[in-house]
Every structure is written in C-alpha cells, then in structure tokens.
Length: 508
Image (cartoon, rainbow, N blue to C red; front, side):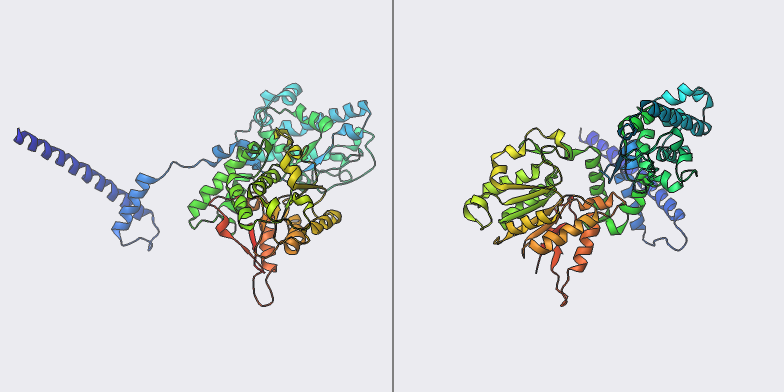
C-alpha cells in the first residue's frame, strides 16, 4: 500500500517536473524572440529580467483594447461632449413663401445628387434619384465600409460644403457657413441665391467653410436613420446645429493630442497606466450620459459622486457664510449644498449681516430659470418650491459677469467671514478666467476655496476650456515676493475627479 502510494507521488513529481520544463522552454523561446526583435545594442544582459517580462506578458497581459468598439461609431467621429454649438434656424423662420421654400429644397436635392452620385462605389445601388435620396444610412448607401474608410472623409467634406452653402440667417439672408464665419446679404428671394454658386460671390464654398459644417453633418453620416431627404427636411424646416470638428476623427485626435500628452495627464495618480484607466472611465461616463441620470431630492444634478462628496466635505470644513455658484442648471447642486447647510445648522449659528432672516446663504447664477434650463426634462421635482431652496438659495438670472448681478453678490458678501465659490457655468476658458477674476480673486476669503468645475473638458475638446484658465490664473497670482496666493489642492481629488486641478485654495 505504502509502495503504491510512493509510486503515485513519484509519478506526480515527474509530471510537475515535465510541466515546469515545458514552461521553461517556452520562456526561453520568448526570451530569444524578444532579444531578436530588439535593436542592436539594446538587449539586456540580465536573463532573469527577460524571463520576468516574458512571464508577465504571457500571464497578465489583457485583451487588446478596441477603442472603436468602446467609443461607438458616433463617439469615434465626434466624441461625447456638449460642445460649443452654433445653431442656425430653419429656412421657414425667415422665409414665409412656401413656393420658394419648395424650390430651394428641390435645388438642394439636385445638387446633392449631382455631387454625391459620382462618389458612390456601388452605382447600381443608387441608380435612381429616389434610391439615393431615400435610403436610410447615407454612408452605407454610398458604399462606405467604416469611419476609417477614405471615402467617409471625402463624403463628409463634400456634404458639409453643400450644407454650408444652404445655411440662412434668422432674417432669411445667406449665412454660407455653419459656425462663426458668416456672410450676410439681402434676404433670399430666389433659389439662385442659395447653393454653392450663391455663396462667396459665385465661387465654390471654400474648404474652411466646408470643414466648419462637418460637425453638423457627421452624425447624419454615421447614423443609420438619416437619408439625404431627411437632411434637406432638417435644414429647411427644423434648423441645424454645428459642433466641433476633429480631424480626421475624435479618436485619433484624442489619442495623439490628449490621452498620451503629458500636459493633459493630470489625474492625481503617479502611474500613467492608472491615468489612462481613469480617462477611459471618464469617456464612458460621458458616453453613457450618467450626468443626466443624477438627481438630488428628485432634481437633476450634474455633479459626479466623487466630487459631490469632496465639495460637501469642504463645506463641512469651512462652514461658509456664503456660497457663490455660477451655473445653476436645474438647481440640484444648489439644493444639495442647502441640505448640507441645513444639517450643519449654520442658519442658527453663523448669521452674517447679509443673510436675510439667517436663511439665504447660497447665491446661484444662470442664464435660464432652473425649472426650464438645461436638462429640465430630467427633473422630476421643482427645486424652487423646496423649503430648503426657499430658506437658503437666492437665484440670479443672467450672465455671471453681469454688472448688476456682480454688485448683488458683492453686497451679499459684505460681512461674511468665509466665502467659497463654485464655477460651473460656460466652460469656455475666457468665461472661466472672467469668473475667477470677478468672484474668486475678489470675494473668496483666505483659506477658503474657489472650485473650478469640469476642468476635465480640456482633455476632450479643442476649445480652450477650464484647465487652461486655471493654469493661467495660478501663474498670474504670485506675489512680488514669490509667494503663491492660490494653490491647486490636489489632496481634495479622490482618485477620480472631474475637477482635476480645480480645487483652488486661497493662501493669501
């Protein structure tokens, strides 16, 4: 019995030795292949290091990450941000003559057919005008295989140029662009006034205007539900909005200019792989529009959970007399800050002279009423009717740097021992810089915070955004003695933050 047991153990040991020998042989083969692939003079003389690397590659390497699959077709081309847009009205807003509208639409269809049909790979599939105009999925109808197909870029540019030549202003005059570059003229009175001959004094639409319209039409190219007739209907009866254009697409631009660019690898982690993981998480956050599903007491609140906890902790630490917030949106964040103040009981213990009946300690500013502003469709409760809103919140409607509003906020700050600010309105760098100068440098108190929100946008957009404004602000706010007046408090960033480098603490 014991002899049989011993023989079994011996057989098991032989099996283990054989497996180890096989694995060692495999590692040696990988080592030899790795050394052969390295440029001359770069091979390491440490076999153990190579063995460890080979083992790591074999056992711990993850599946290749497919960015195209992760982003989806629309995301691959355009990204996910709410980008700066220029929206132009439908033709019908400036032209009441139905006959003229019909003739203009017919001309646009004819131009689309004439310029796009020669590009189609499968001429039989678009042989008739009806086939080309009505087929859902413009790219598919033209024979485009995917967004990397050169035909896609060619089609996008051509279609964008046509769209640019049919853009009108509110008064019915030619616009000849989708974005900022515009050409005004007398109101359109004939189909001859629109189209590529109608713009730029009869010349074809320049490439910069065509590119300017790409953001307006690229989603129509990638989407399965759009036809050329749908495009004409959109422009003539509903209007169109443009967004940023990424060349050749968002994914390639983002990888080159942002993901691996040290200037933008700003998450509060030391390892670049960790930074990449957080950035991909951030893209997924935008892709799935999580911010539109976040609510506080039933009110839409676009503050991510990580930063929400940080900000409430800052309120706890500071116990501020006054919170200034630019960018109310639907009011969910204001209502949350009011809830924190209520729990802290500050209305009973810290009544600054400016606080009316000791109850209004949050001043929030937005262009739109919170009940009808951005994202209102997601709100299931009216924040302005909540008792905590009425107790703590004062809403100012208008631009954050409007002189009357700024004067009201300065009056509210008189006598306040501790003032903090949250900047979350227009995220264009120029506006953020103005708010930093108007509220933070002027009103935020020493050892308190000015929180510049959504600095992450700078990593997803070509337009100068909050991070650029923060960097300029910190560079400028150093005393003659070299003392820093402000510092980015990175300890406030809990791994993931949408306000990277945005927790600005006043030192002097």
